[in-house]
Length: 258
Image (tube, rainbow, N blue to C red; front, side, top):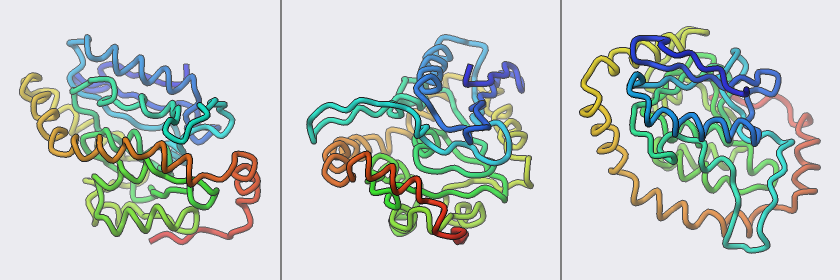
């Protein structure tokens, strides 16, 4: 199992943890499948009224797709097979609230998960960044997701700066990505406290509220996501060149945190 699941972590709340700390909780194909199955299962579990999503350990919430995952692609600039498109709760028609608890790094494909959480709680040592451009890739889906959670200029800067710069928890809080900043190691506990409050309310009203808030941005998100496959196909370097840049990633010095 690539997920650690704690049922009744608080009354009516399930804690879901990405459990690959040795891989910085990167998502391989097994993990992606487990997430999809879990969200679909929770749709039918009346005992669960809210969820907290986090990562095992304090080094990383999630670092996106596992670089070792092999995902064959169709020979068309208009189609991209992306296993992360189905890892979030909304993609699986789950309208029970999900709160993300971030310790350490959250980068790249982690934004698929953060983008489908109701809100984000983060340790003050958490950082957010998108490495795609540094490795010759277009962060199309990630940028679209973050553009619905952060101001345009902040998303553009994070997407363009790649590995050179990381957004601190304090900065993420200031621009609206993070709703609460905790002491190190405290993000999951804070998220569970909020989830327990929400889970105590009538669940139909809560799920209707989740759906209402999501609908405010759903149309724009759908239109923007539709452009992503062509942008990725046209803008990405060939996989072997991406791998070369990734292998050389240690030469750039420590990224600046702002």
